[in-house]
Amino acid sequence: MYKIVIEDYRLEWQPYFEALNMAWIEKYFVPEEIDRWVLSNPEEAILKDGGKILFAVNNGEVIGTVALKKADDESVEMTKMAVDEAFQGFGAGKLLCQSAISTAREMGMQELVLYTHSSLKTAIGIYKKLGFAEVQVEAGKYKRADVKMSMKLV
Image 1 (cartoon, rainbow, N blue to C red):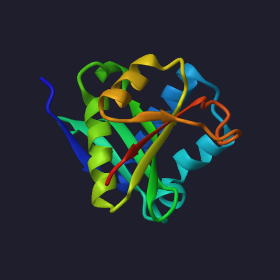
Image 2 (cartoon, one colour):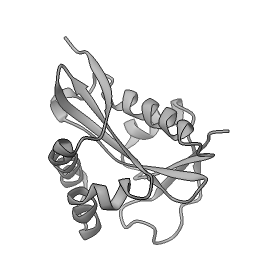
Image 3 (cartoon, one colour):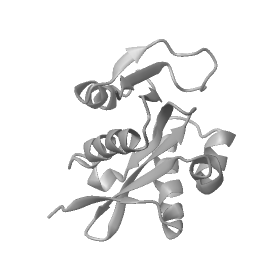
């Protein structure tokens, strides 16, 4: 039985943050140096500037994660979201997204953005159901992102 709860970052969970995301990236894309650095240094890359990292935990086991990286004082980027393949389809991804939206609001952010790829139809469908809308993606922002989505939080 699944009893998924969302928990804040813990230093001892950094290896899960790295492993879950690297598995996801390697399945669909090719990891970039920035991926390796962010995943191995989340305190420096995400947390030190006021960002957050959330984990989906099922019966004590970390099964998914998502990060909120501050872009500026008013906006935050939802990034590095991954769910263990063995637990996909049980709502962990949707719960992580909903929790990221709530957390961004609690942080006082006015906008939540994400970057993704057009081949990830299921994820894009979830994002749209949760209230994200496609907007123009900046050229050269990320090599593998051809879709940018945004949600106004206020």
